[in-house]
Image (cartoon, rainbow, N blue to C red):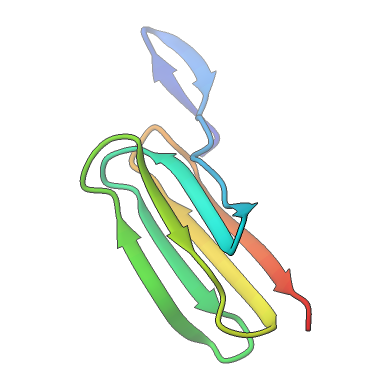
Length: 91
């Protein structure tokens, strides 16, 4: 579902905040209340970390332990869409 009804009008669902590189790791800023962030090691098929925003506009900082392929899933409450971002960490 890519759209929803707001005030009787069909509008696109907003995209939640995405991971951005920062000094020493990554960060997702401005997470709406109830947003869940899950960080997976794709090669090892392992959940590395999980975060749930308990307050509005909450930030989540994280880093990856080793070079490899990682997937960051951001599951925000409606009306937001959910996103999956694959990040390659070089050696």
